[in-house]
Image (cartoon, rainbow, N blue to C red; front, side):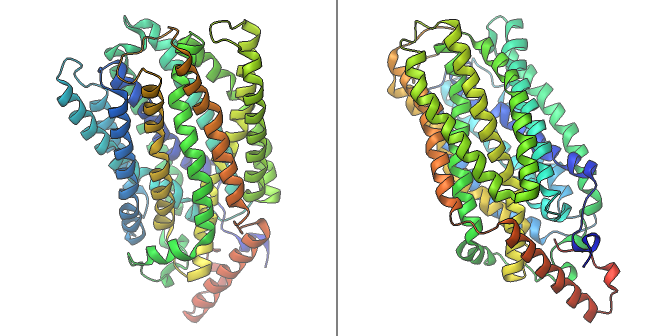
Length: 491
């Protein structure tokens, strides 16, 4: 069988545009990362209580995933399977985020707790709608092993720019323009409107990217795919071992990643005594992240997604060990930091972030491989359910991240006070933040490496899987009298 008939491929611009769907949801995620900071330092709420609310919302987020995944798998109408959920999800998020970050700071504490929790819950629904499509639609977009890593490349480029420029935009550019800097309510109103407007534009572009492939002929076995029942979820959970292992790897890394992002605000503002420096540091990390991603994608295209994930997880873990050993030498006392020590520490952190970011970005195309494996194993095309089962457990575990940060602040004595930017706190606070930034990610990487020992989807196995699915499609369509040329390659 020729390569042109072996896989169904997408145009590079289609992959590039569709990847913006993940960027659109990540824009809202950037804002939600500041939820704990905003509610404590702008609205005056208790960190531990806010952490508990955020944890409950993340659990709620996970619970909604299988429901939305089931709905996606049962949808195949005039506007396709994925596009309706992408658009409606972004609109819901836009409304929820804007309302959340315009909470009246003069209201009662009870009102602010209830109101912000309600807006967070509304955001979760929209977020689930749209992110479920990021994970599930890739299986329809392309199954070419040389193309799937392209999602990682585009995603890394977009995320490097998004996460780093947005942090700089909020803390270094916008913050100084307001009377109370990043504690000013007006800042968060303006920032949320600007960023969510960009998110909506990206969603429209992503819909254009998936438009041509959002059709029945690219869904699993096409018209012959069995109808999905909700109880099929249990079979996937029980028997799709590769999905199980990927969930363990990704969720432990995600727990650490989200906690680190929440703790970095305090690391720069209250340990390095420069909230604005976080924006500058974020810009520094763009170049190494893009360079490492380019190398990693090239490696994944030739050696498979699993090999690339394992390699860069190892590199990230080694760098964390180096930083844990080096940090006491560089920073013997948090009040005695010489400029060279700060620069060296931030350089080490930037290198480690680039390795870990590449491993994290590879996870999404690996979900598409798990979906192919499910079609190979059971004959069912369940991209929505496979993606949202992944998200369900991933969110349940990562939901602890905000709670971890909240408890760390509470144990260090700063759980119920407004923490002023650019002020030195106590040694317990410093230790708590450093444990979150260095030790928690190392735990996540170790869990990932162990789980990958039992993940079977190597490049050779994926070739076997796609050949088998392709042959089944041919046999089914030949029975219907459809010419071979009319049969799309396996999804």
